[in-house]
Length: 251
Image (cartoon, rainbow, N blue to C red; front, side):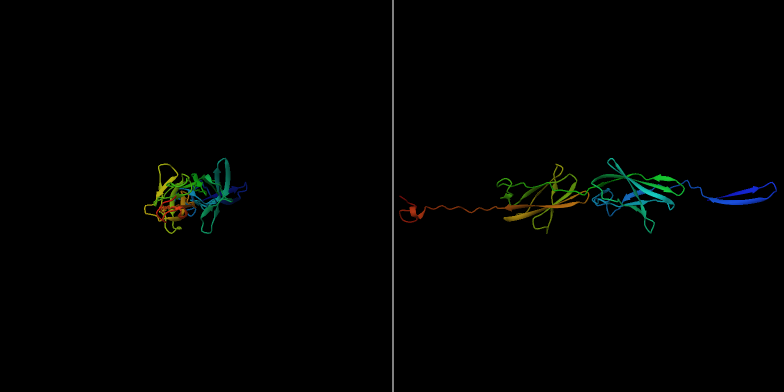
């Protein structure tokens, strides 16, 4: 802050003085932007979210900031959002509408009262709200192909899902207990063989998949285990047993 003093003297020797206070401000902090941790639904810090209207927190905003905006690039489109400050002085920004799945790059622009301008380093986040289970197979389906019947008391299952799925769990008791499938060498293919003997009967397999963004989906497969077969019998029709009944002699 500075004070400018101006003194004027006329030909008669009269003098007058005026002062002007002014500020020279050439400094402005570089702002920061992060995805709100409550919306970072995958691994914390991976900037992957299943929230299609996520909130971002801005930091290092000077007290004399006049304009605080966030430029968002998505594909070939650009959107400019205006940040807001809460009662405690914290800045944040939330999209005005929902975002489609995809990558978004955000940059903060700050301008202060003196006209100084600073931009943040860019932040790229991925919105992922979709997950599917593509195929559930009973591998040892050894009856009619596709009838989901097996005579093996250790049923084996194969689950095909998108490559960003990081966990596949299975249950055959209505979700009371879950077991984790193992990812194969082929991306998106998970396998599990029941280690204990499963009694004969009809079952519903529940399959639950979770992806990197934290999305979860559950699908079912109905299958039957049948490991027993009665011994068939054959007798001569009594009407044709013309000798002594039961001697299996006939004319």
